[in-house]
Image (cartoon, rainbow, N blue to C red; front, side, top):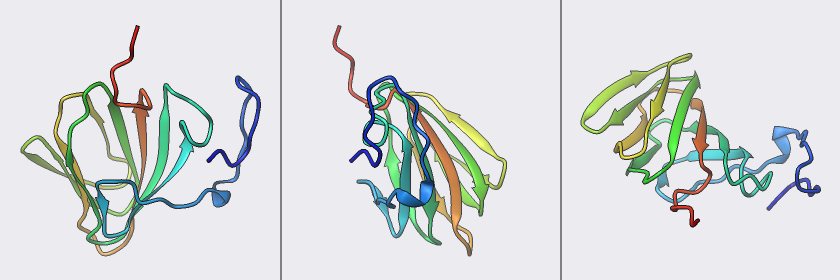
Length: 130
């Protein structure tokens, strides 16, 4: 649901506190996100930007995108990001670009919340019809 209905093509200024936390499919144990810009909040089909906060032990299960690419940027906490078979410790100011076709998962392995941005393009992982 768009928290601030507007005309297509207009800019949006919003307060993050108005957005509800959501646990998306494939996310477990308190792996929560707020969609800052995307299909539900801005109507964007090209971009999905989320602020995520994973409680200790929370995670997103391993998955792969067909056409989407993502950037994760860690703001707080620490966790283990798995890319294909390689594990990477992620801490504040670390980031990763995940191209389509790379299996990945992210687990909060720390004792505090893991907070990070997820930027995804396009917003849907379905092939676009021409």
